[in-house]
Amino acid sequence: MRPKTAELTWGLLFGVAFGFLLHKGGATNYDVILGQLLLADFTVLKIMLSAVVVGGIGIHLLQGWGRVKLSPKGGSWGKNAVGGLIFGVGFAVLGYCPGTIAGAIGNGRLDALVGGLPGIILGSWLFAVAYPRAKEGLLRKRAFQKATLPDLLRLPRWAVIGLLSAGIAVLLAVVERSGL
Image 1 (cartoon, rainbow, N blue to C red):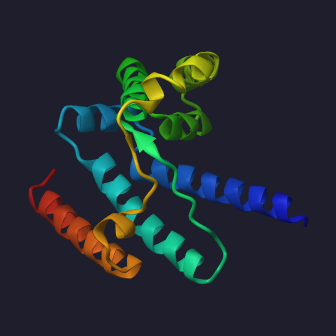
Image 2 (image 1 turned 135 degrees about the vertical axis):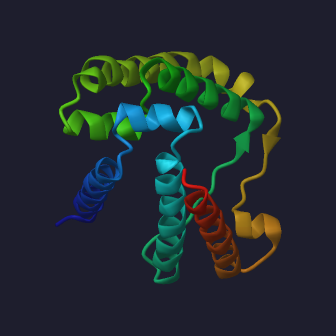
């Protein structure tokens, strides 16, 4: 396999696995997502925080083995505001995020196929059309540096992964004990 083909194949396989796990965890179920938004069911929070721990450990293992190179991108408050609004509107209107839309479509959910997929395409197109003007204006508002969390904290990456994982484990234990 050519290197690019191998990368795409691995990306597809991990994407399918992630979608399967989202589905098995209940994150492609509208009622579960609505429960999260109403702060009544924290299933989605548990899944996402678990994914942060697994992803953090995995990406840093791969980096240590020389399989990936991290290339952090600079951000800005403007980028976060625009991205948050686009994500929030789609999430509020349909009750799915892009990942859960894909999982719900794979599960045969018509609302995700008819509402979600066109929404992703329309939102992507609108952003692409607006991007040339926005990149020099709104998206640059209050820019911040390109850095990883270990860079910002001036700590070794494994110390940050360990602290973050321990903090998330404690938070998950508290949520679980609360019965949510």
